[in-house]
Image (cartoon, rainbow, N blue to C red):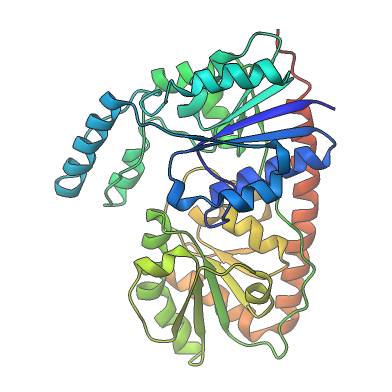
Length: 387
């Protein structure tokens, strides 16, 4: 048993975005392995965090500290936002631009009370926290995404980008603070390995498994669940405009059910039902004939796709929506590269209940094997020597 401290600017509750789900599932898996997991939430956005729910989940191992935006970074960030609204992304940011150094005092006090064997930080831009711990502590970065020139991905799609990106040199600086970095999929592992000599290990998302009955009678109820991230907004708008009309040509009664914060960001459309944020996803997946992920570009791993497969549902994804899951394409789920291919895949599932059941069974079995490998990878991370 190891005593593990996880430092995160992203809360685990409420579960309204894929990165929150990623963190909660990763840490819960560590706890299920028998490790003593402490979760320290740096409360960067208290209006988006549920401290009571986190305290209920992590118990006495929940720690929450207020966040103070560094004054110089605040000025830069405000200027960048003004620029973004008018002309697009302005600047590449240093890796520590958001780091609140007052956190060091709290970490020193916490480490003085509790002897941690392992410290994990979420995202490279919180890596400076690792410097508060000695060499006897195993230091890990859970990277989530590659951030080197990340804004170009959005620029190529004709969208503005307002979060965070950096240079290869700054990303390497963050990675070199750790003994090991966790990549969420193998392509990103390859990228990180070109930036650092430190160990990089892929630990894929560990998805919950639910053996749900198939909808009866089968129909053409489509489901999309997403946060208000730009990739989701762009993807579902593309689907509604370019793909859904092709589906309805063959399935006139088809309906698209949309859940999550994404509902606040999209307009009403024919036969599209906006459900908002839904706490219990099981009824949604139980009643869904086809789950879609039509995003047109992405980084990291498409968590919403692997989660839908874990619910044992037929899934159709775009190539971007199957990023990191390519080994299951055509077996555990279908991929639609063009609007016509995507629509035809949806129609094939909706019109063939036997095929839909077979695909759903393959999806569930795929995630069973996926999770077993992911847990093996996670265990391997903890065997790395800190010296």
